[in-house]
Length: 632
Image: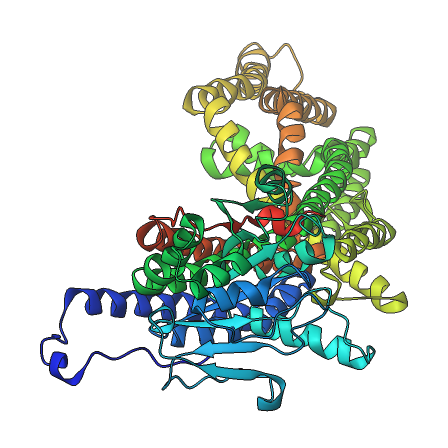
């Protein structure tokens, strides 16, 4: 409905200041409304391809023209539609309001087959979607129509004589008109006040509209207001008052010059003065906010219904990741315990860096690991210098070869085949999550892998996990060994082990010196010790050093098993499996971000309603959102 606002007379225009506070307030309201609609538009245009967002966008696109039309007609006249069942006295009520027989009315049904539009002269009436020949226009210069356009609609249950397509077109006419009404006057009688068809049609158009309820034929029908109000409230309507009038008697009273019925006078004052003259702008403004609120509630209900599925997907991602993490953690801990030689090498390397020089430190550096003892043990069996030299040469060559291989292939604690998680496990977890994503409506936002592509993706993910896990293990184990060496192999420990190690070589040197200088050279009673003595002494010095080295490693590794178990739990985090569901996490985050944005828009709408719509019109009714969604 496009109707220009009424203008003050030329003589009074000069007295109207363009900077009046009311005009500034209206401009501010319009600016905030434009900002709100702009945010809704941007929100709908940038929505991720989630099914509930798509339906929300469709709803917004359907209501956007109505919102824009209402926004442009804030200063226009009030559009009041009179609706109800056929034969309830709608046309008679309209005639009584304008005090003359304008609309066809009678006992024959249906009487009104075309919408009857009543307005004052000079008002241009245009209804998009309606042809001029489908409505009848009546222009009257009446006080009631100064700020109002009154429309008498055909009944909801009206059946044209030719039926068929004509009946469908007539219902479309009524719905087109009601969608552009600011106030709907719903008329009913004792015969039809519980008619479901009428209540359903009213509920369809009530969002974003104020309601006035009128019981007609008061002189014929019993007073149904209490029961009717209870029925309407059960259907979700907020009923402020129900007017009980007899329009036919009002017309007869007018013809005989008798005073009008007090209840009818109260209804006339409501429409003409309280609504059209005083509260026209506020009604239109509140209708826009109510329609936005109703649309927001519809969208929110749709989102809430599917948010649970998105939350289930998020929870399932955590469950799948945690199950794989626990499975991997157990195998990594087992590998760390089994590969003790590897982390013992780290202990020895750290000790050699911290201790630097010293006989025992040099001995451990030369020894190079516990395996060297078994490798060099054949030297103890040598019975001649030739055998000793030959065995030493062979063992030296083997040791150098192993060192070269170690440099070419550094030891590792974790290998992709020892993770405890296979490509099949990855693919199975991915398949489960894809099912949850489909249930959540995110099927169009995730990658779909099948067959060889899925297997290759799982292998790649497993390789990446192995590399990342090895890096973490090396970093944490390096720090842990350094801390443990610093705490349990400090300077005092270093001095103690150096002293213990040097004790045996000192005794051997003392024995050799005593044999050479005293027993052999001075007393000349004993022969010099032979090669066997030297070999046996070297073997025992080696054995003593090896035992001290073992004691030191035991000191360092005591309680380290518990640290390895904690280490496995630390490095095996769910973050390792992020690539498994990266696309799903991205989809969830996009949906959640847009949900937060929509909550912000609804918060802004609530603020506008509180600031500009706090004063409700007690004389008119409305439809609650719950009522618009519940069955009649």
